[in-house]
Amino acid sequence: MESIGKVLIDKETLERRVKELGEEITEDYRGKDLLLIGILKGAVIFMSDLSKEISLPLAMDFMAVSSYGASTRSSGVVRILKDLDTEIEGKDILIVEDIVDTGLTLHYLCKNLQSRKPNSIKICCCLDKPARRKVPVDIDYVGFEIPDEYVVGYGLDYAERYRNLPYISILDPEIYKK
Ligand code: IMP
Ligand code: MG
Image (tube, rainbow, N blue to C red):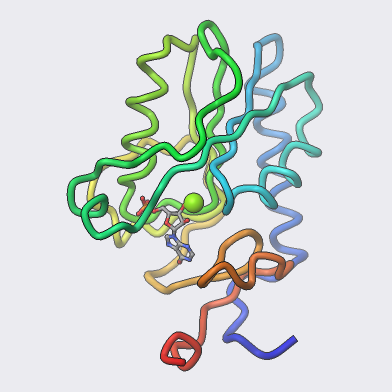
């Protein structure tokens, strides 16, 4: 594959950290009614690997939300493109996200899901870019904190490409000038 920039987190490091997160979640959710909610599409690869490291019965559901529309960015209003298939009342929800950037998406989603009366809500993200936060988000499980760079791979895209890279790379600015 063409070179797309500097590798920030390699495959082995991702695998090791995902395994640790899975073990931590397994301990924390023993005896609970765990539902993983993946945010499409970025979280798909992370959630798939993470779920295999959680040694508990669990269910999975997915949501898709619009992000990065000019108005949604400033207002913090996020449009739901695909809602959950299941009711979440009484369940222990773990939202699985690829990256928390401004925090607007998760801030909105947490409020929205909270109104459906789950037993608990926690957040697990693969990457956290705290330098760009606009609204506070309480993240319970973080894979890696990263600097303020645009990254791709392991589910993260640039214009829908690079999601399938098995590592996380900083996108070479030359590429998005093209
Ligand atoms: P937030 O609402 O600003 O926290 O944005 C969250 C969403 O923006 C993430 O779920 C990603 O889909 C996208 N995003 C933010 N930063 C990056 C990045 O560096 N690479 C790829 N996607 C990103
Ligand atoms: Mg996303």
